[in-house]
Image (cartoon, rainbow, N blue to C red; front, side):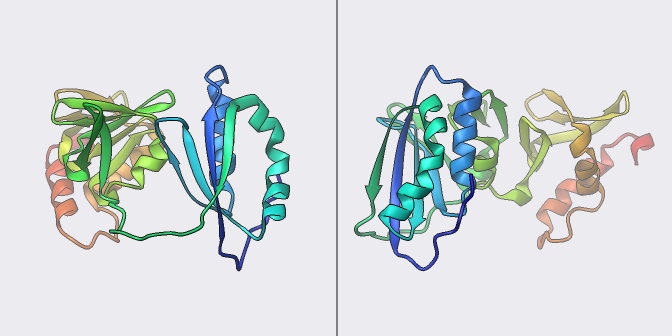
Length: 231
């Protein structure tokens, strides 16, 4: 779909989507990817309630928006149960969005989990699971979106389906020419080959843009626990 950025306009449109429960997950994921990848997408959220997905778009005008939306008709037909279009008339601003925590459902409400208390994040199909202090919560979200809300200097991705807090790693070993991280909960996880270089760099040197010594301390400790042949 050819996409042109809507520039120089104050018109904001909220697209509310309820997915068809019978739609293949691949079609749902493809549609969400198409919408969020648009340069006109200001932000998007996966929600609970009447809708599953809400996205805000910048538009030059209503006719421009309708023309932009038209090529998505086939994707909408295959993945949606219904959708609504709303217009932002007035916006109120409160406190800044908390980007250093994840909110999880609990007892009919929501509980805030600071990123420093998150032990690991794992993918489970179209969902992710937040692990913290022997508890876990399932969220309808992607690894990419949740990784934007936790402090990147505290975490490392060791597999496409696993993100781990550095302080939760007790030691790193090597088995069958692959790195294995041993976690504080007694579990272990093989580091994907695509992330092995990042892990070794983190342990030995650390990224150059880390301003403090906290992450460096984690790397020194992990490096001391590596087997001699791996150093």
